[in-house]
Length: 256
Image 1: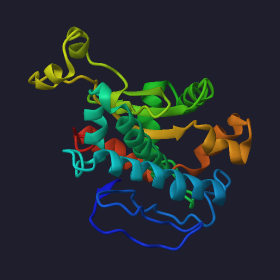
Image 2: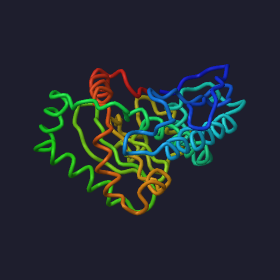
Image 3: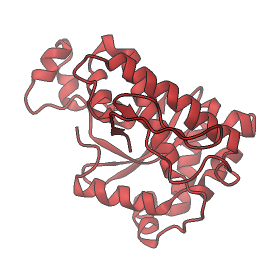
């Protein structure tokens, strides 16, 4: 998703993919061009704003805030996880988490229709009664969002799926405190980090993520969030979703 590099790629814009001129953290290329948007879901100007403007701003901020620190060359997930445990690093957490969220969201999309795999449908249906019930639950959760945030389908370490919201730049990685962290109330953050074998957050891996930030839907839909959510299903790359589910169950994703 995100990679570390010492070279910046230069691609013409607007409406063409452009990498961030950064020494370390850099947004990954999208699997599609920006010039035509994403079907009827995101217009070309909206996609260009999210990828070539907002993402550039966030990554530049991450590089500025991590310059000269131990996180200067750390994977973005590690930056998110560590900064979430340090109340002095709120600015870094917000920029890193939002950059990761936007990239995950855009990597979920496809400009060419990808049919829903039957094994994905079956696995989701088993845990939500039916696939249609899952879609209804996801949409209800997204439309209940008051203010900016994200709606996710997440998987825990045992393979259980659930729908959740995070507000503002929040990500599933640091959304739910673990029982161990609740037992450590009153301890300093450095003491928590030194506690061997203890995880401050429950390990949740995102499978699908939908931006409910106004900047994502307002330009194309105005206040019609329901149409925005409904059209999301038409542009999901179900092959990517399947790969995320497999890698999460194998323990190869989102390791911190």
